[in-house]
Structure formats: structure tokens, C-alpha cells
Length: 461
Image 1 (tube, one colour):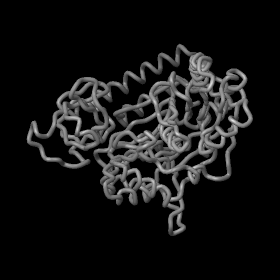
Image 2: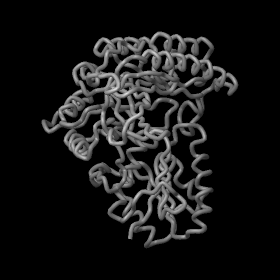
Image 3: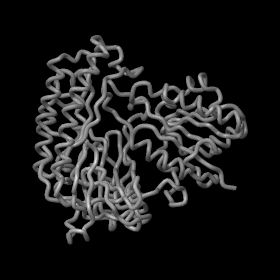
């Protein structure tokens, strides 16, 4: 008998990948995905602990789900991910109706956890950091699990972080850096391509410090791994995230020049434009280091566009420090960005620093920064009008007969197109641009010839 599984995913792309693999793990137990938690036999909240009030959002959702669980006593309610890792026992204290609490390194043990729940009754808590790599115990992704629903997919190649940025909980919830062996990564990539995937995003908390062991027993960097992935027949697009600027090496820069499948878009978090604040954050780069790195990348790939992360109001940030951040944004030019007010994360060094910034000042600074970033994003989008872009059509649009896809620069692109074009890369002429999306027309309407993934855009600065 098929059982229904609902997974709600919070946070980063790594959690999206993990949720998909949980579905794979549970498939042999008869679980099939459903979009509706109220009639699910098992509900998993795969949580993120990065942002402020992340845990409170989870408790709020658990309270709602408990009302369903009271009606359906046999429903299994689980909390996974980084909130589970950080607050496992607290979750069971505040929400004693939760059945399973497990961290991001243990979801491969889900079948055994469910069996323990059945045998012993009471909740199961598993927030260990096992010595064996969970990837060695995960089943292959299949179309049957429902976890793969398009022509793009995430592929985790590296987990954990050893950088210990003062504001970040990742080293405490994901653990030390671990890179998967080259053969395992490429084997999973080939299998995903065989299932119809055309675009792969290589994932890691610090993905450009990938150092997996190859068949030659040598340590491979991310640049070499991308080069090998580019040789997989049928794989048309490669991306990677999230990057740490100080770990971008010459081999990775060369991959941007040499690997045609590697998209001309890079998420490269800088966090601040102030050297003083970057040092307080325990970042291992300065603002000028970042500028020089971007210059090297754009020399290798002139049409490269950048996105980034910014934190405003870090403890001790002065008006001058904030102006340094604005200056860096103006110097670099970003086509997308994620910007946030600093929020203390319990257990991180920054949470106990002196000089905590007033919330009103943080809000004012964030508004100023976001206004500048929005101007840059809209200007870049408008510069695309009249250009021809290869777009991977990966989902239906809101209107009848409409498809939505992603440009090489991760912009959503709307087009009127037949449903059979789903999962294909089509050269579109960009007709209009808005702040967060583009609209295009099909090649047949203009007699266009495809020009492949490298269009004629120059630097996004």
C-alpha cells in the first residue's frame, strides 16, 4: 500500500537536495510524495537555522501540524535539518508530539529510525555526526520517488565548513568540511543526466574548497571536477554554489574560461565592503582582495555576472563601514543579491560581541543597500532586451500556454510556448524586462539560429 509523504523545505539549495534524497530513502518503504500535508502519512520539516527566528517559524508550523496529528494519530511528524541539529532536545520539550528529530548527517538512517519508532514508542532523536559518510548509504535517485521533476537538479559534492565566520551556525550544524570522492560525484551526475537532467548545480557549504579524491588518488579541486563533468554527454549546463572568495583558485578561474557548460553566473558572497568588519566577521578576505578576484574572473569570462550576500548592522559597524559596502557594490555591479540585517545566532561568537547595532539603524541601512542593488538588477535586466538568450524551460507559467525558464544568469524568463518544450533549452529573443524577470519570444517568430550558452553580453559591471 502506498503511503503519502510530505516534505516542507526551508532555506538553502543544500536542503532542497537533502529533501530529495529523503524521498529516495523512503521510496522502498512505500512512501510517495504529496503536496498536501493534511492527508500525508508522514510529514518532514527540513529546517534551516541561518536566519533570525528560524526556529520559531518551525514551532509555529509544528503547532499547526499538531492539529492534523490529533485527528490522525498514525501520522509521523518529523523535524530534520539544521534546527533539528541545533535544538533537538528543545524541540522534543516544546513539541512532545513530534516523533522524529534528526540532523542533516543522519537522514540516510530514516528507515531504521522509523523502525525504532514502531518498536519502542516515544520520540526518536538522532543528531549524531556519524564517522561514515551518509552518501555511501543513499540509494540512487529515480523518477519513481518524485524527487526529480525537471531538467535541472542539485548535486551535493561537499558538506560542512571549517571557516567559522563569526555570524554563522553552519560549522556547528553541518560539521567539518567533507568532500565526496570524484568517482561518486561523476557517477551520480551521469545517472541524473540519464534521467533527463540538462543542468546540474554542484552544491557545498564551501563548494570551491572541494578536494575530493580522484581515481588517481590525487586531490581534485572544483575546477578539475567541473572540467570532468563538462565531458558528460548530455549535460548542457553546470553551476556551483556557495562560494568562499578566499578559496577561488587559478584552476577554478580557468574553468570559467574553458568549460563551455559552466554558466556565466557566479554567486560569490562578500558580506561587507569594510575590511574592519570583514576581519571582525572572521572572513579571510578583504574588500580589495574581492575586487581583484572579480577582475580575474571577468578577465577569464568577460560575460560573467555576479550575485552576492550582504549583512548590514554587524556588531560595531559604523556609518563609514556601511559606506565602504555601498562603494564596493557600486564598484562591482551585481545582477542579484541577498541582503539581510545581522541577527545574533545563539552559540556564535558574534552574538556576544559589543557594539550591537540598533534595529532602526539596521533597517535604514538595509533599505539603502537594497535600493542600490535593485537599481543594478533592473539595469542589468533591461540591458538584456533585444539580446538572444538560451533559456532552459523548466516549469509552466501562470497563464495558459505560458512556460517559464532560466537564463544563463538565473533570471526567470516567461515565454508563450507549447508544453512539449518543457525541459528543453531554447534560444529566445528578450522583449521586455522587469525588476525580477524577463519575457521573450520563440526563435521561429524571428527566424533565429541558436548560439549556444555563451551569448554576446559583456561584463555585467
